[in-house]
Amino acid sequence: SQVIALARRSPHCRVLFTSSGAVYGDYWKGSESFSENFKVLDDSLDEKLVYSQTKRYLELMLLTAAKHHAFHANIARCFTFVGPYLPLDSNYAIGNFLRNALDKESIVIQGDGQILRSYLYTADLVLSLLLILFNNI
Image (cartoon, rainbow, N blue to C red):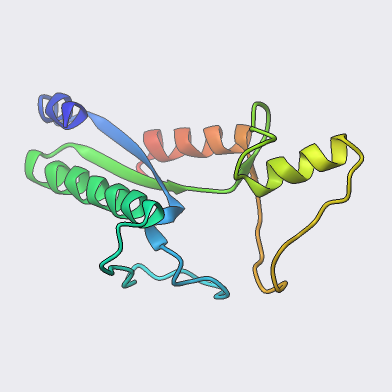
């Protein structure tokens, strides 16, 4: 809300909100594409659901404020990066794979082989975010 209050003061202000691919929920697992018309709401207070719905709420809050107060806002739904300072001992699969490789351990992939992941290098992420922010993409 403080970012929105600041942006409201200048119609030339640009805001880039780095959201998360988590807003898509788990409904797409096994699918090759995403849809903006998803339905993931249920009665659960699961931590992942709360996180994804909070991100989506913040996106809507920002876009609504931008429309009503005439400032520019973009949303970047960021996910799956690799690069320096990535934790090697947390819930990021690529970090765990790198740790296994560095420790000369086997890399174990759990799953049925249906999920396809690609990773964006963090330097490319930063350049992409700057392009989005300054070029109205």
